[in-house]
Image (tube, rainbow over the protein chains, first blue to last red):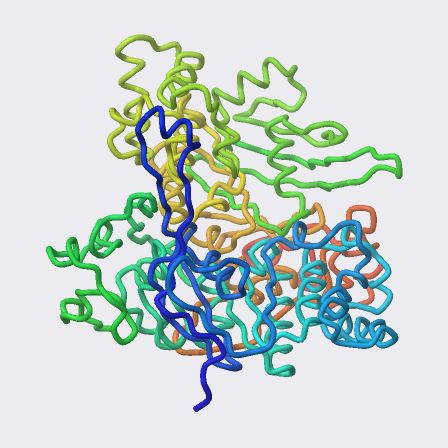
Amino acid sequence: MRAPLLSVEAVSRDFDVSRPWLDRMLEGEGRRLLRAVDGVTLEVRRGETLALVGESGCGKSTIARLMVGLDAPSGGRIEFRGQRRQMIFQSPYASLNPRWRVRDIVAEPIRVLRLARTAEVDGRVAQLLAQVGLAAEDGERYPHEFSGGQRQRISIARALSGEPDLLVCDEPTSALDVSVQAQILNLMADLQSRLALTYVFISHNLAVVSQIADRVGVMYLGRLVELAPAGELFSRPRHPYTRMLLEAVPQIERTGEPRTPVAGEVPNPLAPPPGCSFHPRCAHADERCRRERPELIGAVACHAVQEGRISFAR
Amino acid sequence: MILQAKNLRVEFRTRRGTLVAVDDVSFSVARGEVLGVVGESGAGKSLTGLAIMGLLEPPGRLAAGEVWLEGQRIDRLPQAALRAIRGRRIGVVFQDPLGSLNPLFTIGGQLEETIRTHLGLAGKELRQRALALLAEVGIPAPQARFHHYPHQFSGGMRQRVVIALALAAEPILLIADEPTTALDVSMQAQIIALIKRVARERGAAVMLITHDMGVIAETADRVAVMYAGRIVEIGAVRDVLHAPRHPYTAGLMASIPRIAAGAGRSRLAQIEGAMPRLDAIPRGCPFHPRCPKRFERCLSSRPELMPAEEGQAACWLHASAIAQR
């Protein structure tokens, strides 16, 4: 078996959220660190789509930036065994330079990375635009002339122009309407099979993830709590948090049905609970969960699952 | 009926001509009922809500139509009278809870002020009423949270405070515009449950504006689907979502990703193209360029809402059924 395209080993990332130096001196406060990613280990295999899901503040965007090399980890190691990594961002409005024509936006990685001779660049740009469903003439226009979905197509064309091995997509369809989201998800799937791309797909939307992912990692407060093949995770979720998330997704099939809403909310990441960080919201938590942090064993980081205290009668 | 909107038309006068953003929209909401208004960006759903509340900002204006609240016409009232109605009889919840709260006052203070203004309570009674409201919307330890400022609350808790404010004067109509969009799924489910309870237990009429069909499915009794400024389908939520009568609704439903356990990766159905811009709404049925079922009549003549099974759909496919009757 070939080595994975990307290995993430016990990676952490801290952010300094201390108050200004003078305030700290006057009030005798120390530095404050926010651990956005906490000891995550996983690998990305060639040609797969690995999705990372979780609620706001779970660290999924931070790990996306680490995986693409935009940030350096505070601890642990990331090894990338490919040539180039590219990223697609959530906002198709903020991620395109409004003063550049689309053809220059798409051509920039080609020029910077010297992937084609100057005379060939225009042809390559036209080809890329066609690949994402835009016309060659669209290259002459500016980003503001396009709708959100079309802009996201431009972002994808730009990312592909760098001929990446790995594409890290951070909520690429969250800002789009559902009918446009379907178009973009289908486009991404088509491009993957045609160009043998590897995706890391970051999303808060479990339904979108179930549509596109081969494997899914669930994050909570900076930690990976479950990592499993998509079919397994959605048919037989094991971690209590994964089950809670799945339970919370509003579903069209359940029109008008009553259900028990999820209790509580994500704790302050500056002061995460000791032991398993999910224990204050977990119905299965016991003394060990409050004290000892569970490691990811098999597919799940949960004492109750590992001790067989949770049954999976489904 | 608590709310009746009749033939609403919202226009924007621009240098390039008049744009019609909401076109001949009519519906009603009964006591204890949740009406979902759903559509994609630019469909006119938020503007419809703003038009009802009298909150359209120039150059937008209500060019035609009537808004009736409990048998009283309110769209022609002077601003001052309308403002009194808005706080007292219409409660409003917007997407961004921070924008609805004053950062300089404690949430308890804001709540008490609202109750004092609209219900005229004071002293101990006022405080008790405010605390009861916070408890009702699910703020844990309301006594302790009473003196906190908005920034000390999480997004979901802030939205609860906004809902408490909207309910403070015991309104008969609650208009919620994307109340769950800025929230995580676990919070979303809690806010949905809260809105349903408001309709059921207080008997308020709720107009829930959202782009999220999942939220509609779990919350609404009836649903209106908007496209390019018009209602294209309206009916009971079960009928519209599970047996859509308009090809746009059908396409929209099919394009929603679903969690299909064990089914694995699959292609989503997609509607080709995009919703037209307001300055380029096609002749005939506005949906016809994207419609897989269009025929000649759709290109030239615009369908009005017509009976389709239990509900109504603005689609010529249902005209033949009517003629046969």
